[in-house]
Length: 253
Image 1 (cartoon, rainbow, N blue to C red):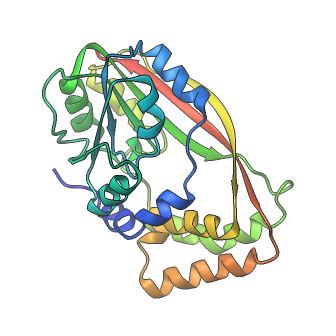
Image 2 (cartoon, helix red, strand yellow; image 1 turned 60 degrees about the horizontal axis):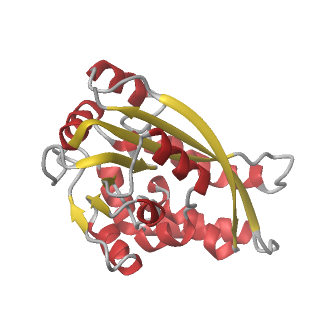
């Protein structure tokens, strides 16, 4: 099992920025997944690729135990600072360090596109109880050039770096097709929720710094990009980002 080097390098560089700048998830999205997957208060659930714990802290009110698994050491360290009462285990989607049939649901926030889908699906199915569920979440900004006048100039600063970094291993919907081919899970269902993130300029620069394709740049290039973003936004008092949260759920066959 090996992790995509862009993820290990990028997230290894940017754990504090990730915690500071990345959006959380709307309460309605979490409640939807808990309901659709039939998660009960006494269940143990797994937050896979838990990062700094943004999803874990939203799951804690619903269940007696959340097991967090995160492969990047600096992200686990930040997780420990944010959630000192929850242990984040060293592990990856393709090698989950928990026992067979030990969790009632697996949740993945902003990460399933990084996984080797067949290997991850087999591991997720292994750790789930019979009929256990899988819930996935992604945030996508829905801002427009008309609503945010500086957005075209911002895209001009960063877009070529994203293009140069290449596609995600299971991005562009490939994860869903690959998951279906494993025949380990039932039909995937989808719904959307929305929320708004309000940031200072410094918080938004931290968000940009946390993107793997920015965090993975050389120190000189990364500093130049972030300086350009900060200069573009120097007149802004608040950054407002509307998000669509895509929510997917399915059950182990």
